[in-house]
Length: 340
Image (cartoon, rainbow, N blue to C red):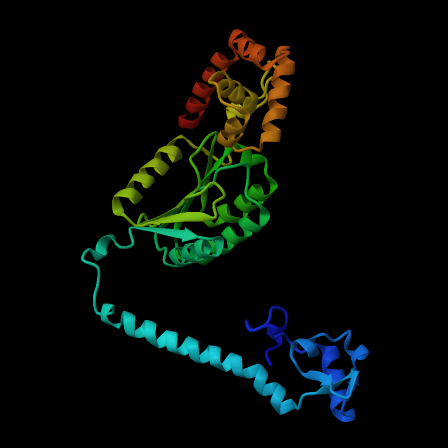
């Protein structure tokens, strides 16, 4: 009997023969019967109908012969197997006429494929990256990926580094302070991988050889789309190139995030700008690649620095303080430094 079937049964109410049941059944066979009280700890014997009441004494049970017990257990299983075989043959016969047919427009059949589940997504990514020969472009939003995810990414990277594939990755500025991201960049950049950061970027994006792209189809990223439509992929390549153009190389300092003389950090300047635009905490955190708790801590520090006692007053004080104009000036300086 299959040792794995014991927990859930075989679909006909039969369960695995438990260890205690084995010993008691052997004893019952040797002695011709067994006391009902002895099988309390081995209910599998009753469930498998391997014991039956003693007609002469209700306190005793008599064992069913092994050949009979085995037959009554495997018979429904064999019957189910036969039914499955008949169903298999029926489905094969039903689909046989379609096997010689093909879609009228085969070129668009797999233009967009829905990948449902992390294992399916990872399998598709592995297949595409294994076939990568020229270029791998990635956008990774957030303050940094978990160590396990980075290890998975590093595993994929190692398979293509030796093939001379050019790799470019975009992170958000907040990832510069994430230990896992920092360690990952230190590992891949010596092999020629290029990394830049931006304050705000689009959602996750992976483009392989400018032929296939992967984007999330749900906020939890457990459903993704595999895109092979030439127009869609080229559009996403253009989006990536625009972000890359404005990105700051990993080893360069992010001027707008450096400490400011007014006591307000660069990230707090960015938060102030988004607050004035009317964004809620969750939206600000998402756009700047940080969790909501960190975002709210920055807002609290910003309010304290400006002497605000309420969210409404904070918006007024931000506008009156002139820090937004200073932020725009810093961004101009940053661009000049970048292109100098």
